[in-house]
Image 1: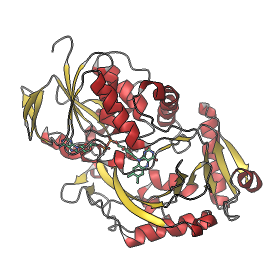
Image 2 (image 1 turned 90 degrees about the horizontal axis):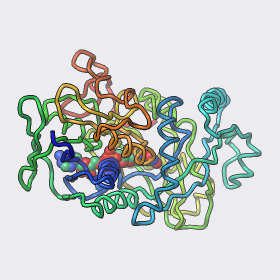
Image 3 (image 1 turned 60 degrees about the horizontal axis):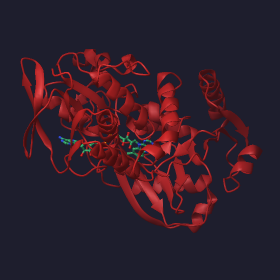
Image 4 (image 1 turned 180 degrees about the horizontal axis):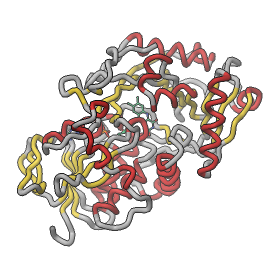
Length: 409
Ligand SMILES: Cc1cc2nc3c(=O)[nH]c(=O)nc-3n(C[C@H](O)[C@H](O)[C@H](O)COP(=O)(O)OP(=O)(O)OC[C@H]3O[C@@H](n4cnc5c(N)ncnc54)[C@H](O)[C@@H]3O)c2cc1C
């Protein structure tokens, strides 16, 4: 490999563009290839929560805390406003069982150094007077924030381009070129592009893209549906998720039996974003009536002021799910030059800044600020023999789970 490698990134979502930006500002030769448009995948069909409280205590939370530090500086570095606002976040608690679980969860997060505390109902209502009295408490962190995910993705891409990255949209990669067990480039709809390193940042399609190189990676699409209201007066001052949302995020079985919880945020314009489902339905990005009805019912039960709002649109995105809830970051040892940067599930926006930095450091053979060991593709080396890790190649759903189509509680 040359001393300054040519790095090709597949995917123009928040992860691919963040990596491109972090590489390009260091003078690296970067090409980013996107099948459709920038932010046309999950990064343009999601909420913009930079929520620390929803991350598993451990390396996941550590990564989110580091990402947050970088978000604070990011606005000065990117050429477009990304609307990063630290509103503080609430995780609402509705049952005593949830309270006990959240108490332990909060203690674990505090032990890692997160500024988070449990509030009782009175304290919650002081912060958010519009919430329902069925809420018995909440975990609160002043650090939780939100950002505009589309502006963020475009901001990374523009910054990369300003620093001489080559960005090709409407250019699907159709083949990955391999010679002597080393990746040499890709074939696209516009022709062949040679590269020293190829980074798979194809989001929910990262499993498909890996297969082009003969590698199996357990990244699967997990649909999330969202409803958006018209712009109304301020009724919600914090980013908000329910405790059930965290449980459903990490446990697909729980999501099927106990529901999927709710997330809510109100944008500067006054639109409320209400989300979201967690469904294994392959690459189907459609909305369903039961899914949207469920979201609206659950949201209105927690925020009665919603009755005065109208839903103006719905959409759905595909989270890049992995079986252990952590992204897959770093070189694939079985194939030289092939590098993974995918699988952020519902956290890709929040983790985008740190992911871009860590990946750039790793690609340039520098020591990353956080070790990538926990995110290594090698943790799935037992995939060929472990049915719990396998993807059904027909449906792109977890092979070991009989997940009912689009079912919501
Ligand atoms: C409903 C919902 C709500 C969410 N809310 C949040 C939130 O509040 N906070 C948060 O942090 N995260 C949230 N997420 C998760 C977040 O959206 C994702 O983790 C993140 O967008 C993933 O970014 P990505 O760049 O990996 O994937 P994507 O944005 O999907 O980008 C991948 C890109 O690769 C391209 N591609 C695929 N195949 C090819 C190919 N063969 N050739 C070229 N290009 C290809 C695709 O077109 C796509 O543009 C949410 C997701 C959903 C669905």
